[in-house]
Length: 479
Image (cartoon, rainbow, N blue to C red):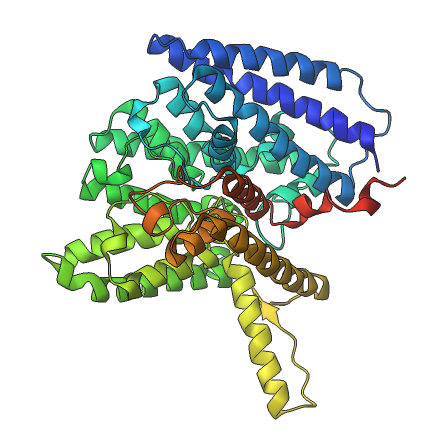
């Protein structure tokens, strides 16, 4: 394993993280807040450390699958640990465990929070908190690859390890150019969303932060009651459209921009994604209709929450804990399903779910016709055996980690809906759960042990489990 290259890449990542910390410093100057001093201090410190670590460029700059996974896993842990320090130093989140939980939740675009009064935070703290969503949404290492020379075009394994989904490829021949295209699309869509929110009467500062949370499908709110604060059909409509948009594979968005609409429409994953959204909205609308004055009002709230949950954004426009149990269970199911592969959304992903069902269908057919041979196809192509094996291994490990996490969090002695949804929402990077950790709740009452476990779950969910678990393999570190 090329350990020198791993250290070099992590040094570059620290430098980038330190530079990014000066953006909230600018915010603190605008709003004349003293908290910016802490971000500047931490930023300078990690820039210096990163520079010293990456000062000497390795002679061998090869990055293979093993190095790519390690760089991504250690990189996400590292930025989460250092990104939490300003919260502690400023006193806005005194407990380091709480600060790490909040920062991991930010970078992994989960949106679960320990804060009981979001509006009491400084503009600087709120900005950094939501900005982590935007950086983490597309991928911290994807950002570094796009703008900092690391491995002279040999960074595809980093891209594969960080971009969510069972398969990832390059949009163009060079990885660096692919990363830049992704971030340009990402930035332009974010800017359009900010403009639309400002047009709807939201302040510029709130619009920027809500757009960060939407683009990264994160869901950190700037108000204690999330999107309920504005109670605006226009704002909810805009957020719903963009949450669903950011849950689509960015390759398809790129093709749409190029005018290759036929390729977009042929996407099987996209069709299933939109069909599941439509079906969930219809079912919840019918189930909750007696609670509202009109069917349009029921559609408004159900569509927002469906879009928010399936894309794992986690914004809330209505206290869905008051909905019938049937509607709550639909939302819980959507937490597991998640968005499309190659998007900023979390969850198991639509592509995996479809392939699981197709595999199950084939096995049932074999029981009826034992000698029949039928391969599983997805997106019009046979599913590669390696991909098939990988997604089944993913599900096995996913369920094992989920069960262990559930047992540990159960030590808090909360009710079943709280405990189960807390693990579900963190593992799938959704944000709010049900009951205590629900639409109007938070994670502050959980024990430090539970917060550490759920922080691990958030990282595991965002990185698709294997990069993080690889760090615990003894064979990885042997020469």
